[in-house]
Structures are given as C-alpha cells and as structure tokens.
Image (cartoon, rainbow, N blue to C red; front, side):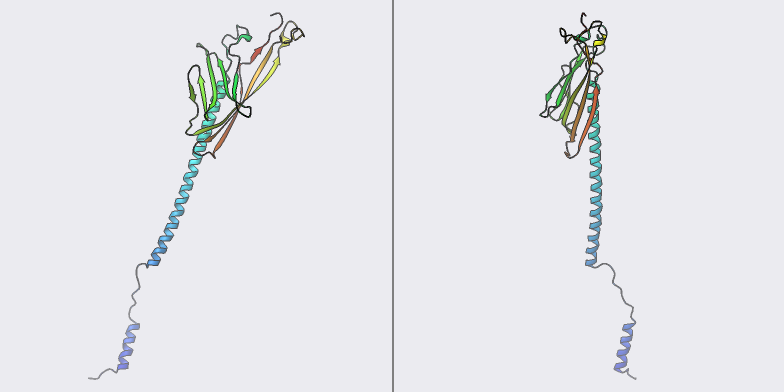
Length: 236
C-alpha cells in the first residue's frame, strides 16, 4: 500500500484547518459588563436628579401658593373687620360727639415708628358692643374679640409674620358752613364741627417657616365707613 508523503499530509492538514468553521465568542467580557453598568448608573442618576429637581420645584410652588393665600386671607380679614370700626346703632338719634366707639387706637410702635396693633369697637345689630384688636404677636397675626383671648389668624408652621405696619391718614373736613351761627371766632376757636375721614394703609410681610428665602408682602388700604365727628356749632 502506498504511503502519502509527509509534506503532502501536512498540506492537507493545513487545508482542513483553514476551511474549518470558526466558533464565534458569545456573551460579554468583564470590561464590557462594567462599561454597561457605568452607563446605566449615569442614566439612572440623571433621571433621579431630574425627578428630585421637579419634586423640589413643585414643593416650592405649592409652598409659595400657600404662603400667598394665607397672607392675603389674613390681610382681607383685618381690612374687612377694621372697616366697620366705630359703628354705633344710636348714631341717627344721638349726638355724634358722644359715639362710644369713635376712637381707633394704634399702639405697640416698632423702632421705625410703624404701629403693630390696632384696637377699636363697634355695635353689633341686636347684640352687645364688641371690641376687637389685631396685632403682630410672636411672628403671628392675632385677633382678640371681646374678653376672649388672642386667636391666631396665621399658621406658624407655614407662615412667619415678619412685619405688620399700620399707617393712619386722617382727612379733616370742616362743617362750619352748616352752622346757623358763625364759628371759629377767637373766643370760640374749637367749636366748629369737623369730620375726620379715616384711612389706614396696612402692610403685612411674611416668610415661609420652612424656607425663609420665600417671602411675600401684601398691601391694602382701609377706608373706615364711620367717620369721626368732633366739635359743635355755637349755641347748640
């Protein structure tokens, strides 16, 4: 039997090796796995940061709306109640100079001369007279009605009142022309009747308790419905 020469056998083996089907690698290497995990963490971190930013923005907007709403509600309540100061049920049948509720008192002035408390009284239809006092107390807006204690009008857990400033402006109108006799003579200089039209400018400032950087301010003007009468005509 003839034998295949060695060099011919080697060539045949090399030919089979070149044409042998290649086995491709499957799966991931450790480096590829680590790179993929790093990219996944970057994407997840970015998404989490975006979510936290949106959550913080929503929370701030909600707190801002709550602060503005509570501050406006407190200022409206103060203005609405102060507007009826001095109301007297017997004013149409009695001398206006004897109105027991005519005075509106301002006190507790701050260092800059602005008043932080207003006190007044008025008649309630079919009921006893009622006294009221609005004030800034320990960074809260409070109301005292009658003999009751102070009621908090703002929630200290949400709103921290930093300033209540009440500025009075009175406009005096002379009613001397209505007197049958001349008044204001040197002998009786203070007998002419006058009408004081009272106006109060109110500034209410506050900040969020949990975020002092969030601050709001409300300004309102109150025209008291019941003007204050003083003086009389000569001979009356």
